[in-house]
Amino acid sequence: MRTLRNPIFSGRWWILASHVLAALLALRTTRSHAADDFRFPVRFEGIYRLEGTRDGTQWDILEPAIVGRAADVLRPRSILPQGFTDARLVPDTFVDLDPMLEKLREKHHLPGLAAIVIRSNRVLAAGAVGVRVEGTDAPVMLGDVWHHGSLTKSMTATLAGMLVDEGRIRWDTTLGEILGTKVTDMHPGWRPVTLSQLLRHRAGAPDHDQLVTNGVWRALWRRRDAIPEKRTQWLRAVTTNAPVAAPGTKYLYSNTGYVFAGMMLESVTGKSWEDLMRERLFAPLSMDTAGFGPPGTPGRTNQPWGHQWIDGVPVGTRPGPNADNPPALGPAGTMHGALFDLAKYLMWHARRGTGSGPTLLRPETFRQLHTPEAGETYALGWAVSHRPWAGGKALNHTGSNTQWFSNAWVAPEKQAALLVLTNIGDGTNNLAFKATDAVLTRLIADHLRR
Image (tube, rainbow, N blue to C red; front, side):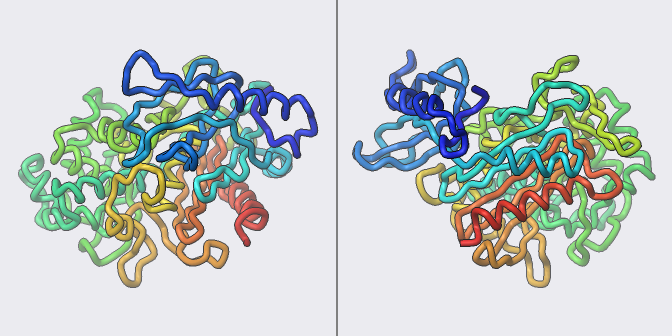
């Protein structure tokens, strides 16, 4: 069986039987060879949730969704929040979205389409349909890994919040303070630019078209330097010229600003942005599949490929350099991960670090990440609006490297999150956005109106 489905929707008695059997087996927790580790035996390729307890009677959800594999699931004891004494792995069920997704996938001619709704740390509904590569019969799976483009931006801002909480950097720390020595002839207009302005797209940083015009983008592809050196060359090429607009005066969406913000975080920690993400965000949230660049193995279809519209037809791009932006772009948009791992991250933001999950950030820092300045609609890595279905504030971001498309919404007042994604870019007619938005409209109506 491909995934564990809710028996109400499957109509097959043996799925229910396997669910009951797996529950009996999976509730057993054993210690691994490391005394501080949990080893959870997995008996079938279904979806599980990880629960923890303080007293052995009441169990709270620590991780809302884990895809079962042949190997056992390992977790360090450090996953337990303060006061929790034990953990267990429990098979889970949810509404099967495949029938609805397949209709919309066919309507919009997408290669693959996946979605999830999660509320109060429980998966309400999920599904994944279509093929990993157009023209093949390799099916999309619920555990597959997808590229998420600019959803990475809120993660970079979140990482910045962690370092602000630790006193290692401030929101008003300037580019000149941290990176001024890397560019001795930095234009005076760049030196007072703050970390907050970079993350709010108010630094006057150039957009992609300007990078193409001035040759920076081509240089990022042609140079063979390591990623830190490429980012430094990016910094020098841009900041020796004046900002596009006076810092703090205008909203200008810019990947460049996020690259510079990531460099500031690298400088104050002495670690690469990639390592910081793995250590400070992916590991604590148990985002096991999270990484960078296009997923999959060149020459194979073991993960979905990104696609582009060519003459109105989806055409796949083999995993490799041509399947993504330059790696130096990392802080602005190179993250990949499975549907459920992204859902963990979104739900953590929806709950503002409260409940049974890891804290990682102070409550006031969550408020800063989620609150635009007066008169603005973009906070720190999130576009912010108010929606009736969300009960108030709603956080949103889309992400694409032109070959994938992710559309995420977070509703903190309802402790809910939605994620819809496809393995093809928008093209010239916003096709991927229209398709994912149609799915979101259905999901909100079916699961979050009440």
